[in-house]
Image 1 (cartoon, helix red, strand yellow):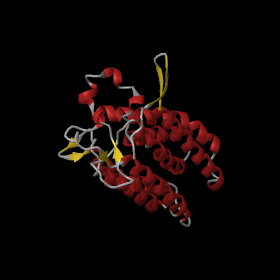
Image 2: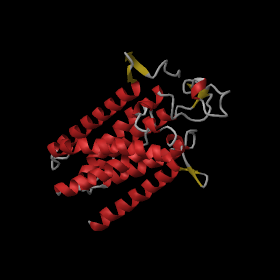
Image 3: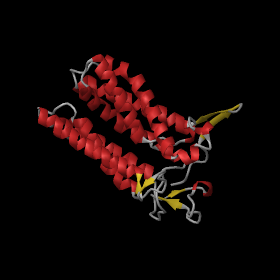
Image 4: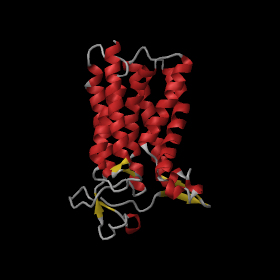
Length: 261
């Protein structure tokens, strides 16, 4: 695989349209389409208008959470580059921050509207999988989220010298970790939709908590080959810690859902 020739689609009078932004827009649009389609056909008790009404605040909080989480984890850099904190077109967002921001805002919204948080969280889980699968290709155009050096034909990704991490300047090809995660996201969607959804008398929240467990398990495996951890705690990458916490949250959620029923 070759790296993209540029991260910019077009630039006019100093104003640039970046591939990263376009892909993020497509990811959000695709996620919304999938959520609405699945809700209308398979979740008759879900009000699709309420689903659409809650999207703007949740998407906004998810984007803010994704960026602020990343900035906080790499504060040593951003403390000296304050003007880049909201430069989203340069990349640098975290799915863990997006999940946190989106879940918190969704929980508050459903409590205010007095509707089931878990029922709507299940619907959002499907859209998250598809949105993440598409959104990961923004990393490709920004030459980020790649893995360790790779020599496997048809898989190895060429990374230009200016994007190679310190100590890896002599390597040209790396694992396309972003692609691995994108494929895993599609796999998780298929498991949720074609397997878990068809469990007889499935309880609200099962899809959402299963998503947390499945996605995080794959993320732990993929993270082992990445080189761009922004923060390590006691020698453990923050993404691993966050993923373990999400798995524990998913397990606790499933126990609570079935214990309550």
